[in-house]
Image 1 (cartoon, helix red, strand yellow):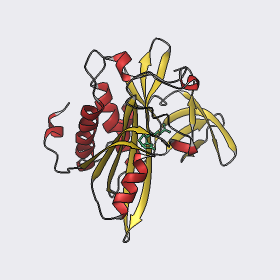
Image 2: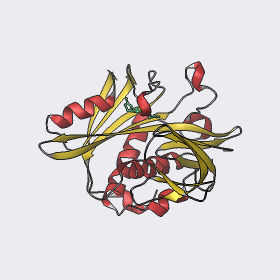
Image 3: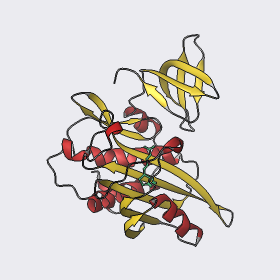
Length: 245
Ligand code: BTN
């Protein structure tokens, strides 16, 4: 890990829970009551949430389930910071290539191609006219997955020789996050790790099917896709499939 991460100014207060419905909800509740910087970690979640209204499997001690609360930074795309910080920490555990799938899934290379190892859910709320962000991070540490995830997900323990503790991983992510929140956002750094780049992608946006080659991101962190008809389309949100990874 690079030296800037060792002494960040931003400090997240910690809250460790045995069990909760969703750490994102606890972070929001505490934020609404006046906390500014908080990391909530739980050993299990009973209603873990993913993007696009999906659920997130959160069995006891099978993963890191953590939410970070902080004031919304200006001119910064929170999902970009989140993906950069978490990717960097996961990559430090393994020699396998670790990449970002837009907007902020983290995938790791396996014998069967890239598999999802971590999902991030960014949410926001307003307290007294001030915006706050919540980044919910779910890293698969062990392989106790429900049947439907076995083909698409993998876990950190399968890709490292290092000892893994959810608490330690959480600490490292807090540190990396603090550091990324303090520095200027680097879209080129994000793009360097983006598995979508220069690959064929497909997505559905506003009911329209989009197919083309991903050519990068704009300054808002939106995905740029070159469609067949030479037009560049902008994808704001949603799910993007990447071919041949
Ligand atoms: C995704 O893959 O769609 C995002 C998954 C985010 C899961 C994390 S686990 C901690 C936090 N609490 C939640 O309910 N969700 C996030």
